[in-house]
Amino acid sequence: MDNLSNSDDYDLGYQPSPSSVDQNDRSTMSGSPFAYSRTFSETSAFSEPIDDSSFSSERSPSPWPVAKSRSLTRLPMKPHKPPVDDHKLDDHESTDSELELMKERFAKLLLGEDMSGSGKGVSTSVTISNAITNLYATVFGQNLRLAPLNPEKKALWKREMDCLLSVCDYIVEFSPTLHDLDDGTSVEVMASTPRSDICINLPALQKLDMMLIEILDSFEDTEFWYAKQGSMSGNSIRSGSFRKVAQRKEEKWWLPIPCVSPGGVSEKARKHLRHKRDCANQIHKAAMAINSTILAEMEIPDTYMATLPKSGKACLGDSIYRYMCTGDKFLPDHLLDCLSIASEHEALELADRVEASMYTWRRKTCLSHSKSSWDLVKDLMAESDRSDKNYVLAERAESLLFCLKQRYPELSQTTLDTSKIQYNKDVGKAILESYSRVLEGVAFNIVAWIEDVLHVDRTMRIEE
Image (cartoon, rainbow, N blue to C red; front, side, top):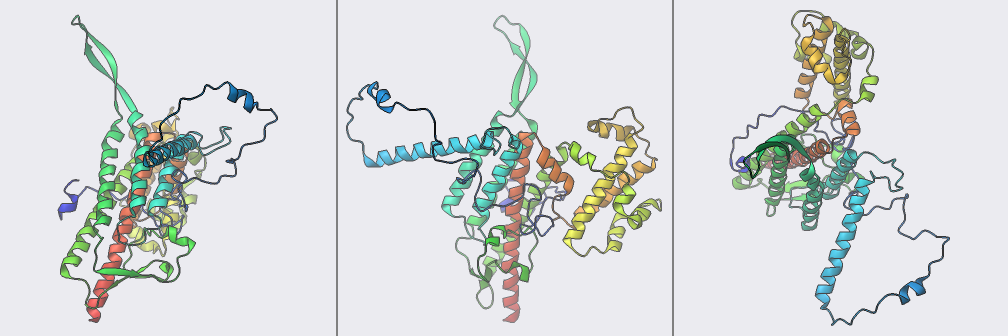
């Protein structure tokens, strides 16, 4: 990973996941990078004070009298202190202010975004996932070009991500270890160690985070500049496109247009752009792989299982079902070619239908077993007869879904992924999933912006 930015070999063993999406549309690949909690706000719910109607900064009226004068007379007189330097006083007040603000932010996390304290808030895992998502929107939401981050926003990102990620320091697992006593006796005790998934993925994500910031910092002195097209509307905060941009499109009118001198940029600058594009592209793939792994490990909510159709045929439709049933050899790529998917919305809708039919057939395969818990589906599938029709159809649906995600790597999150995030109770998985998701968004945006500049450069050189 350390050699990623200094080498042209970027093979990270990536397998595409459906988690890359665009920020303009929350339901399609060209939409928001977050189908469930991949939403954007103009300010961070964790990093910015929010005017919430459920609470007020003013003191609520109290029917009980307060004896201020009596309590004050009982206070001892403080000894006179020498005057304090104004600079030290300002630093002290600033520290107190930051401390109080941090207390307020963590209180909101603990309350589950329900400031009434009635316990109606969302779970801690969803709250911290939303906090990371909104912090990403606050820091990177207005960053529409290849340029270093504002120093204040960079400090904000580092400071608050350190606070949010500090929760992982207390997520541990216990394992038996031998401990030698003073008398030479060995006893077995339980020792705590960092949880394996956090120990592996969190340092990798922090490294990817640092590399992305370094890529943006490398574009301080450039041979290209930007000219605004249209006005900066409120939609500009959602401008981080998760689509690969090859040329300016009418639907992206709010983005600034990269400009280069006649003849294009120099060969050195062009090489730098390509190198950084390849680095960001591999970072994007690594973040997608981590995000896909974490989502796969999350439990399937009962609410999703309850909404599954009774028949996989009714979910997919007659034409797709007939193709999947006929023939000994199933060719998912040929089926996708025959479907002629015209839009990203159609691709996402098909992915939802295929995934639902896959779990419907798997559930039918397991009905003949005495075990009914969905947690044991993997064991039951291993015990199932592989010649069973439902088993075969489930396997073909899985291969079709995989090919669909391969063909559309920027596909938005499916309904199942959205449900997993919404009902997830594991704080560690929530942190890893949201962190990898927002880094995936930053990396994809950098690739798209570099592609924009390279396209303009090619156009200017052709015209010249």
